[in-house]
Image (cartoon, rainbow, N blue to C red; front, side, top):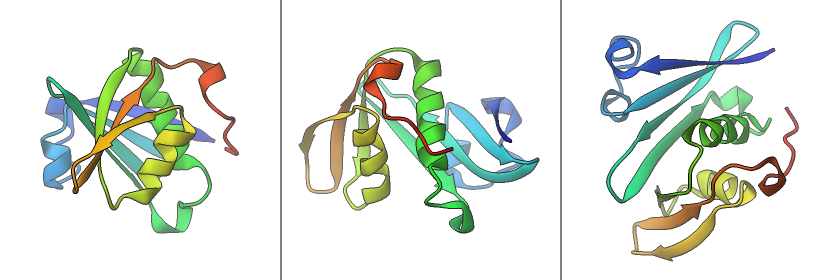
Amino acid sequence: MLKIIKKEKENFGKDFPDINILNADKLYILYLDKKEIGYASINESDKYHKIVICILKEQQGNGYGTYLFREMLKEINQEFELAVDIDNYKMIRIITRCGGKELGRNGKEVFFLIPKYHDSNNKKDNV
């Protein structure tokens, strides 16, 4: 059974020493049968949000990253712009699968417009 636990900023620094997570505004931890299998963090800026999604290697390819991204979209519940490293093809695939529209590139990042979440905008997961 999948379960997501959201942690507030002041409560997750000691659990995850990664600098990207420590600077995050929100953190979501994904559990499968009580075992932590991944996390997602959001840094919200004035212009572009930064999202990091990390799934254990042995759990990748099962739709968990897409599932986590969609759950985050439900909570954000508004249209926003997102910047992704240009080499992060897995995240780019998740974003386009979830209805994101590419706005442009600058050589190191791809910029997307992420629509407000609606079930009809998203294809079904296999999770």
